[in-house]
Image 1 (cartoon, rainbow, N blue to C red):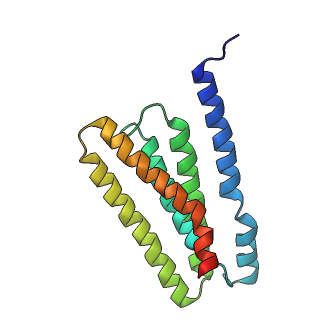
Image 2 (cartoon, rainbow, N blue to C red):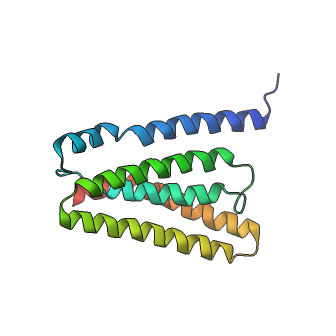
Amino acid sequence: MMISSLVLKDAAGVAGNIFAFGLFVSPIPTFRRIIRNGSTEAFSGLPYVYALLNCLITLWYGTPLISHNNLMVLTVNVIGAVFQLVYLAIFIGYAEKEKKFQMFGFLLADFGLFGVIVVSSLQIADSSTRWIFVGILSSAALISMFASPLFVIVS
């Protein structure tokens, strides 16, 4: 019996969403510690900044304006963006003054860069070129998100 490619695509999408959700909830123990101790200690907020940017770009990729039939990509990244915003709000709330301003600046930069990506991609008339452009940016953001802990180690 042959399994249709649509069934395989949906199964991969559900599995991907489950794993992504696990990734989104994995910082909860860190944030419990931040709240319990009333300080961000030596933690860095950069991984959450990169994760938010990745979620925003990838949710844009999942919209019908960019690609068709990507509801799972859209929904999991909306959920991910909400998680990252909550994490960043907690981080900023408990950070020292200097780190607070720095993280708020990074948060504004995320939204600014996302706005530039949305506006510039909408200027691309050809839908396939727009799809490829946003897809490449989404891939770059994903690589950046997974590489961000390495930047924390270096600093």
